[in-house]
Image 1: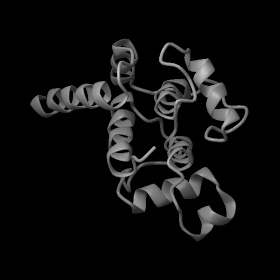
Image 2 (image 1 turned 180 degrees about the vertical axis):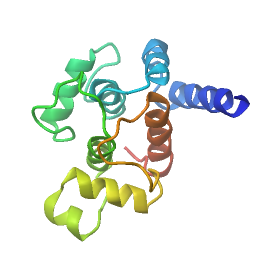
Image 3 (image 1 turned 30 degrees about the vertical axis):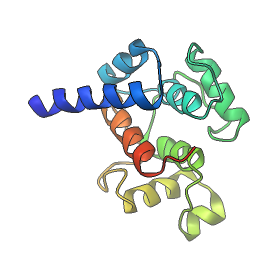
Image 4 (image 1 turned 90 degrees about the vertical axis):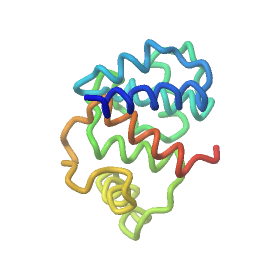
Length: 150
């Protein structure tokens, strides 16, 4: 329990510094989500990329990421975030060079395999299982820390 509280505190602090004055409500909402949504993840990525303002809605963030090619077309903001969808969004956000299959297809399933191989996502993560909000923020934190640069 202490480790979880420490991680939540660390994540909140990290997002406050890196992503500036983002809404604490968005962070709290995502941490408490047992199943994160595409809109919740898109909000953080869109603000990070300056594709959407901090006061934008999740729908607006998804639309902004779809326009920039980070989020797949036709995905709704209220769709449950799966590991493979999330991996695809992360690979495109930081323009990560993937393996041969990802380079050829740009498919989310290969994005997941590459991020698992690089240690960002657990190797045991099921591609179609839902990502919890806490896990999504932890993965985002790792990507921002190690891939950063935008």
